[in-house]
Length: 303
Image (cartoon, rainbow, N blue to C red):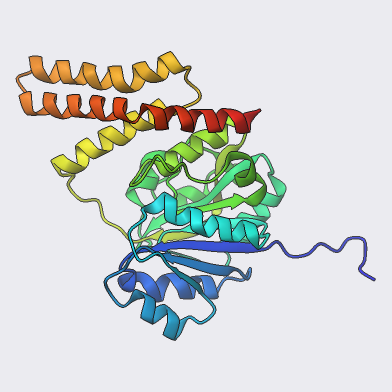
């Protein structure tokens, strides 16, 4: 007979979306294997053209590999892993980028913080760069934390932030059941910010566990014109489905805001920028049925 104080160890499913994973595969997967808190791993491969799938099959037999045979994007591929975790009744999801890895005590510290702070729907470790010499540039932009030492000086142990990028997210299954998974309206980028907004709309917080650390091996690169305008489109789309705004405000902050930028560009002598912003406005208008469906689904869940 089990003692009354006995509590089973929380179960964690690590979900990794891969595409040409080879440069990081032998840092990412072994870091999870070395976790002091055991975790299952599901990799959803988005049609890699390198040796990713063969390496996983040959070297990591404990990893469940799901081959999509096409690039589904970040959100849709993660949703496959999330559904698998729900079917197997895990307690927590840990979304881990393929170019990221963790320390042995990272998962344990995150889960311990989640167990003690149930108001949090998303918890993240501190994101260091691949060398560990400083904070990841994107993480630093969102949190103001520049390195490990600054993070350790924060108080309390769990600190709330409006947003932290989804390279290393711990999500209680109880929270994802309330909010739903990533919205399919997003294909490349914007999925994480939208889910964060929906978490907050449902009353959950997003937070940082200051004593937990992960590594995100990427570099800040100059943003191309194409990338810049795609980020503009994603921003306006995120505004369109943001349920903190009424529908008229959502239209104003998305379609009308992009039209305003088109007018400003025109009168600034930037005709090509004007055309791109007009294209964004028309693209948003063309997706309005999907936007309304996304807003409606979140509203229904909130009730």
